[in-house]
Length: 396
Image: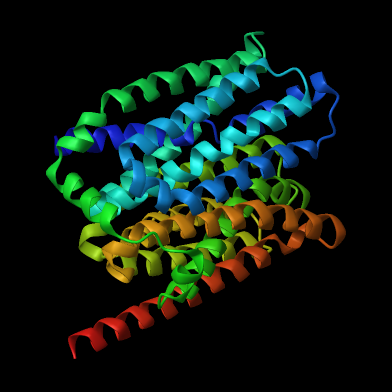
């Protein structure tokens, strides 16, 4: 039962990653068909992100009422509706309408499943869980690319992913008895049902939360900015061929996915705090390699891959440490707020760099990344000191 439920959770995270890269892959064709400006993709993305932030903040209340399994199944159902809606949309307004359930379906399941794995499974499984997200995010552009090159159109790509999501949704509903039959989950859900639903003001006052939220914000700002603007920086600033730049931009995401798979084998031995420190060190080293104005270009290109590998353990490690840092009774509420903080960084910071690149210089790309890496390191170290001090006070 234990292993089977874990496999179901892995499938749910593949499902979570599947829709994430679709819009970027399909938008060049969609905007031509709908005669929409290039930047309108940002409006759709923002609607999805806002929905994700809202559902993340609601995840504590919803999960304590329904349980993680039902939250996951219903959230995937919401995504299925959104994806089929996208495939049938003939106007930009309809895309915006279906972007609402698209976003709402992501935040609650993300927080609920992260919390469940943090409470009941080892650190290696958290890394492999987020590796599964990377698998889903890697599959969907291939599906969209096949739909476009075969002449089926972008709507067919969305429909195909919607069908895959629907199959995964049925698996999640069929697996609901596993959540009920697993004694550890049952005991946890019983304790949750008796616990108070924390307000945002109460969560912020918990010692250490004021450090973990900006750490999450900084990490996601760094990861998303690095991935979104890598190709433009390599092409415009380093004069690297567009096809080479695009290939290495994709290698950045491969670095994250492969890195999380490899980190799963060592994370339990090294520990979450050290995994975060090592990852941050690799990120900073990679950023320096990207920035150094030297030839040949291999140092810059491989520096970008190093940034991806450095990113790999940070998100899973911070999530997995949450119950230990703040208590199991607070974990679901805090993970929900962490997700909201993460998606806020994803929503705001990459577009901000776009404005900086357009109005000042895209050469500031590595500087921008370094600022967030430094902020993340500072905040995680402050968090570690606060938690250590709290634990010392409890023992004395």
